[in-house]
Structure formats: C-alpha cells, structure tokens
Image 1 (cartoon, rainbow, N blue to C red):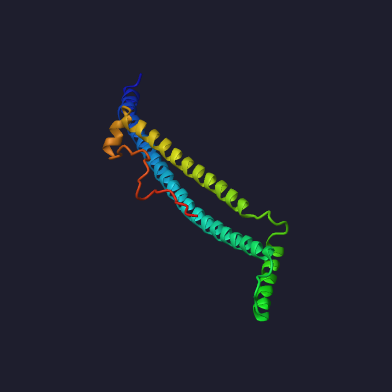
Image 2 (image 1 turned 30 degrees about the vertical axis):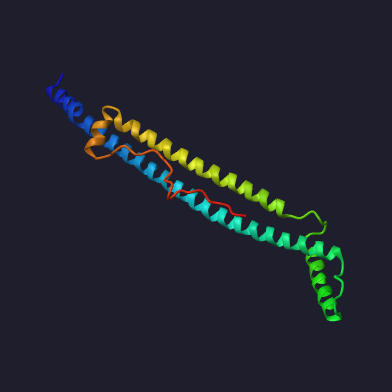
Length: 187
C-alpha cells in the first residue's frame, strides 16, 4: 500500500474525525440548551396565561354572581307585594323599580329560578383545570429537556466537550413561591 494513503488515513482518524466529533457534540449541546431555554419560556407563557385568564374569569364570575344575587333579591321583594303605608309617589317609584326588575328578569333569565351563575362557576372550574394542565405540561417539557442535557453533560466523552465550552448542568423546575403563586379566589 502507498505510504501516502496510510498517512492520509492516520491523519483522518487522528485529527479530522475527532474534530468532526467535537463540532457535532458541541452543536448538539448548544441545541439542547436552546430546547431548555424554549421550555423555560413555555413555563413563563403558561404562567402568564394562568394569571391573565383566571383573574379575568374570576372578575367576570364575581360580577355575574353579584348581578344574579341582586336580581334574586329584587324578585323576592317583588313577590312579597307592594309595601304598606306608601304615598302615591312612593308607590309609583316602587312600581317603576319592579318594572325594571321584571324587564331585567325577562332579558337575562326566562325560567326563574334557573339562574345562570352555576354555568359561570363551571366554566371557571374548566378554565382552571385547562390552565393548570397547560402549566404542568410546560413544566414537564422543561424538566424533560433538562434531564436530556444533564444526562449528556455528565456522560463521557461528551462531558469533555461540555466542560470545554462551559455548558453546565441545568436546574430542574421547582416552583418559586414568590414568583409562581397560584391565583387566589375571593368570592
């Protein structure tokens, strides 16, 4: 065999293959870092969604529940009849209020006492479940990506490249109490 070919094979095996392996390993680690960062961003998105959706839903449900309670109170008063010992102006004012209550009942709810706040609370419960599942999925994705990169970083010979390019182990997701508090509901 030609000595030039033997030297070329040795150079490829000793120099070029390790360089290609190093570049491939380095690129792989950098891609894993990007996946971890992307997954961390997914947690931030899920937390923002949870805060936005749940605070808006709670305000909405509270507002509707208040409206419903007022409607029910007015209906109860109306059913009790006209208060006694009223002047004609007071009777007219009372009748005007009752006309308003009746119109509100006809528009908002046709089949008294089938009031609708229960649906709002059910929708809120479904939204809470949906948002929490989305957040849990984001956390699992993050931890899965962290597990992958950490496994690669501690495995020989990839650990050599990781040390050379200063890729460090990532921390698994642990909820920070101050920043990741659950939304509190106050009805």
